[in-house]
Length: 558
Image (cartoon, rainbow, N blue to C red; front, side, top):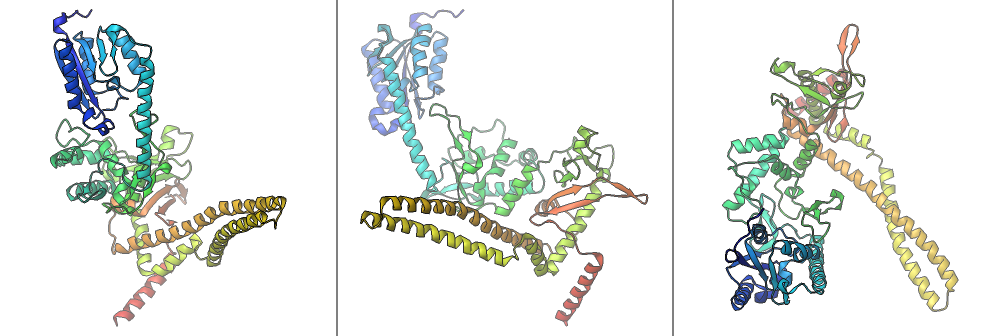
């Protein structure tokens, strides 16, 4: 049982609150003005043991305010005799919570509540009009929230960043607070995080590496340069966590895009933000300098979709997450223990391990995969270096980009559809004018309008489909050229690295081994990024091409 406090020990809590919206009221609504009014009232009414509490910058909709929570904690301990506010809305703008405080909590805790300007004093009972006043206070909060939301929607749709602070790696331009510029010391850490991800490390491993190297966390960095940061400093210096790393790796802003409307709130009363589906984001490309190029960002997103778990010994294969079973479609797990050498590490069908009746082991050693991929990439890169035009033509034929007539027809069809849509608008307008002049009957106008509008609807539905076909075709051509450009940068490939693997390999499909003439044979299909499966020419053809290449090279040097 709580020990009852003596009256002289209990305090009179003078409470002031100011939200960002209330700041528009000017000095009349300021914390200092509220304090003056409260102290004068307490003095004039001989209220004992006054103590001033205030929450600056907190909405009345939420009650998780530091000062208010401190008052309620003291009240639960029997230390509050009176709670005085300037006006009733200072207590809060959520009618359900305010109603519970007045009708239950303050009665239970024996706290006298006074709202000076609204003439509310629970010592005299609560008037029946107070619940109506609570409702109006809540409506005010909702109306303010709606206005703020509309302003934010307008700003967001105009491409103005909605975040209070730029992402780690950027800072606001001194001459324009809505424009971001690169903050080089932080940007260097961001680049390092992406590079480690490309090399095959996951968020947890990256966080451990940053901790061991003594790299400042984003909150530590912001505090070090005097920038207000809502995130508290870590308990221990340089305490990076995987969640922070993952958030950095997921932020599209690092390629130079502004991304608005990532989150939303279900109600003005709920402050918790929920994630929107990505298709509902509003993206404005190339609004600020990029820290990460788009190819690297896309590669990292792809890698994160194929997350690689280290073995119990902490070993991670650069092929982990890329191998798939040709029969059941499951990923191939990786096994490397301290009981045998790394050369004996192998991959196996995870579907088989879960259910032996479902599939077979599809066992294959890591060193075999490495040899096959290295040889396959060497042949592919050599072929692109020497026969770039032929390779591009072959891939274009696969993509269907050689069908110029079909593409030209699609473009003509698209232009014709757009022209017809505009023409129908003019026809309907002309028909309406003829009807108004008596040159066309209303019945005839209605018949013509229905027919034209039906045709126009069909055309408008067809236009996006045609545009999608043409855009996807152009996109494939661009992606192919980027793939060729990346391949040409590698002049001599002697060993594989995680960066090379993740840049050029999409997946590796492993079939079950078979015995042919007493020998073990196993089919392994390598799918390359952008181009998919690629088979090198037969050995005889490769030899012929190589001889032609050497002959041509000798002619040029002669």
